[in-house]
Image (cartoon, rainbow, N blue to C red; front, side, top):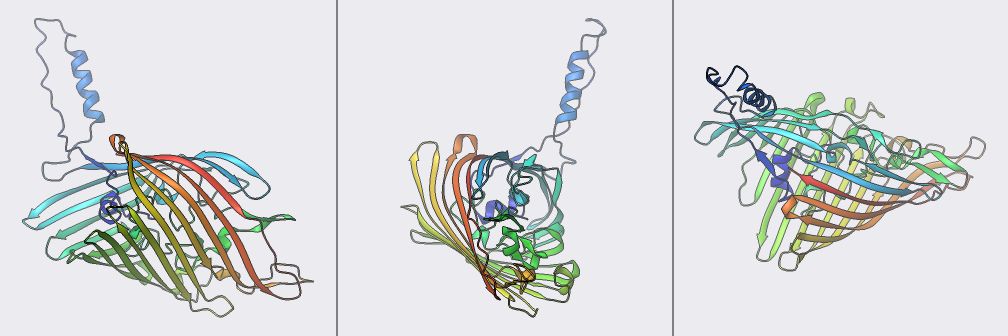
Length: 438
């Protein structure tokens, strides 16, 4: 998943003030060998060796025209999960584009009002507790992976044209409307819990929570929300901001297209962030239904009373597929009330609660028999509920967050047939952790 579209894009879309970038702009060092006649032949060897080490480890400007910026974050979590019968303790990284990362970005001026630039973003988690974790393997090996690799030409008047492997227009379009400052810690996407197998009195099922959280636009990925949340090879246009509004549109390989509109503004003491996006996916991209199109609508908004810090964030997602069967479309609702305080000199303290409802996201399982051949029960609908609470403490002096959160999820199924509808145990996660930005 592409959670932020690069740190440069993050800072403008979710206003995490502590997501700092360090512009190095360091020129290559050049040392003239010192004369050794008066001090012996090895007098300057240590100095020259040190200079060589600095040259080898310093981030350099490739030339005097293009800037170089390094930014990113490191995130680590401590987790206890409980599936109703078994529990375990896990230390790991966040997953996908929430994982520890670094970005190398830069820009050069072409002429007044025109510039060109680039973005190379890499995720670098170690062991991950995330989307693929389950009762069998709850600590998945991470690795170094390219998230973005693209370039752009920007006009202050006409907007920006980006091309390469990048974040499409509707990637996190509704998720990043969350202005609570807690989006890395918790959001509508099932970054944790989706990979775990469902459990009932008979033991572990062969179905996971993600089986009922499928995104058709992402070939059935079981993440629940942000169903176009992955980078791919595309061209994206970003408009200038006018009266708080700006537009993004992208078109990628296999004729995948999307468009999004964003708004940010202050209405007196009320801060408003809002976004809407539409994505159309062609049949070749819906892996489990190769003859089906998919259409995805996402909307998100935050309203916050600035003096009190009281706010409410909400997300709605509707996805439909051109398939036959009992499950052809899905609905997702997610709400996060929060209060942001300045109780300590360390930085802002944010308390939040969350509730999400994920309805009929079992696209590939429609009419599937979940019982036995002799005594069948065929799936006609599903509903996953998720709720929780958390607190995030910002530490401004160290450009970091520390946090604690609880996540609870339950599932209800609708079936037809003589057999009783299966029921499954709830799942809980208790998580603490930290994020440090650089």
